[in-house]
Length: 144
Image (cartoon, rainbow, N blue to C red; front, side, top):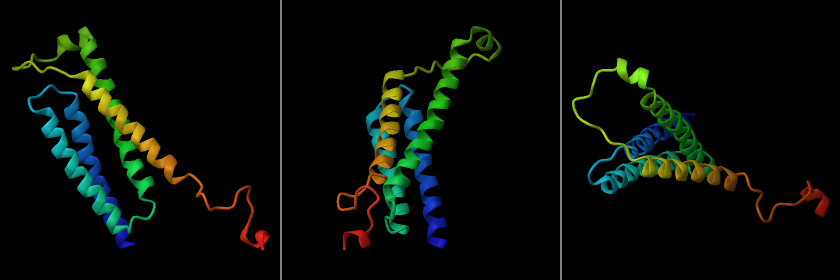
């Protein structure tokens, strides 16, 4: 029970770093590749720690769930920001920013798409039947 709680906490921390990586992918900053690589490496450390605490049981499902949940949250946030920035009436009510912030939608949506696809792939790989598993619902007793 304690292992499961600790692994979930580590997965939440990993999800936070994946979320930060995805959010920063949408903003045009210098040395973006280095920054994204470092944040992704930190996320991988926490993912691996969560998997190790749980003895890597069903790790593909857990890692895929982290990527998919953060991907869904990031997609919602990106679409919300895009909607706000496209509404002239809402922009007129907001205070003018001191600095101009430029967005890099190509990199942001590319990373978001890869993240969601990786999550789906990991979950599908975990739920795939094993090659040595009996097919068609046959049981071990039926083979004897």
